[in-house]
Image 1 (cartoon, one colour):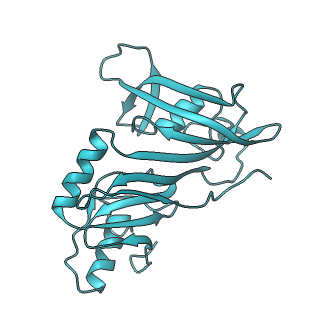
Image 2 (cartoon, helix red, strand yellow):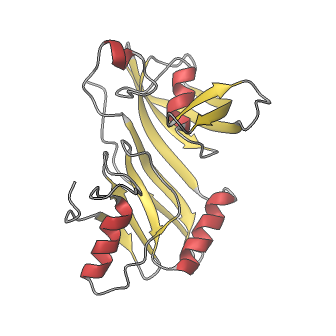
Length: 221
């Protein structure tokens, strides 16, 4: 990815930018020469003669595509960060799984422990030191004999949460080389089939409720 690539802007005003993050592009990185959403949006603002401030208020894993909101000033960054911290934002995902859930709708609640050395997380017993509670709800919207597409709403935002919880529940995500062990035995050659398709929050200045949604980038064959 070159820094010259243009971000896919969905909405913009003087306080926020909403855009689609492509799969394979990091939200924010310290690696020299590697494009990320923060640098792409800073370059975009600079090209328009604006102060190239970009406030990163939430993140998506590098292999995950999806809709994101960024702040254009510190006041907006502070307000959006507060909304996320106090769970006033809603985030929705699509995931294609290896395996079909027995229940068409359900909730997953686990305690997750992050390993900084391996950049992974795992489900652990309740009460484990430094573990964090994770919760999501899902609904099956498509299925065939071996795969399903789930619509997922996050109640918490833990490291690799959806990927870890679905794998632990016996329905790992197609293309997930970290948590879907089938990919290590018979690689599908597919990208991680996880997309953040919808985000809802209040505008940091007007406090009007905003929702932004993108199309599902994958389906069952």
